[in-house]
Length: 83
Image 1 (cartoon, helix red, strand yellow):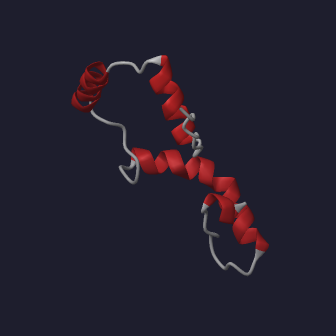
Image 2 (tube, helix red, strand yellow; image 1 turned 135 degrees about the vertical axis):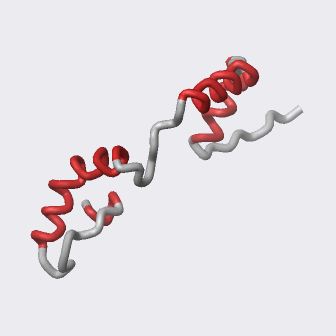
């Protein structure tokens, strides 16, 4: 589980307890790191306003555009219809 999630053991990687401790404490450590300004941080109000303006400018996709985006995000390709 540690390897899948990218969590490192707390001390000696030769002991299973190091992995177990890491898995037990990471849910408490992650939010504390954010509060300390490490890693991900909450954006400021001005950034949120800017992003709102960007979304308004971009607008919403049509049904066809949304379908194409969904296929692309899933890594699928469509064959072009024969004419």
